[in-house]
Image (tube, rainbow, N blue to C red; front, side, top):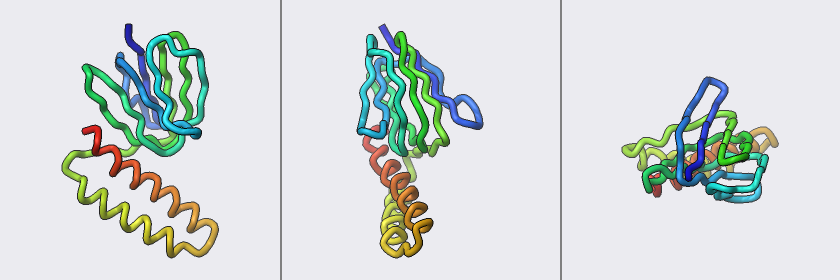
Amino acid sequence: MSLNIRVIAPDGLIWDTTAEGVVLPSLTGQLGILTGHAPLITSLEIGILRIKTNSKWTPIIVLGGFAVIKDDEVLVLISGVEEVIKEDYSKAKSILAKAKIDLDSAKTTKEIIDASQELKIASAKVKAFKFI
């Protein structure tokens, strides 16, 4: 058996396929979903959504959202998505380094929140390279 997964962002359908498994970046940590999983609704944070098809993991950087799991159907509604391109690893590492500096130098609450979000995105991008 397999899971049917749909990933939808505000600008449209990102992914619609069957999968062997899915790992969601939930607010409480990584959440693995296999066939036969109990019904669930969970919030997602910025992180790596991994989809396993043909014994290969594909990473997608999601910018928060929700997931609904029921009857081997996984519906993921996300706020946004970031692309992971194999050739951009060094660029991703430099963006991560800059994000760390920006967070360290942030003064206002807004600057701290913005810098924290950018750091999460940059960190997820660097980690995603393990899966491509």
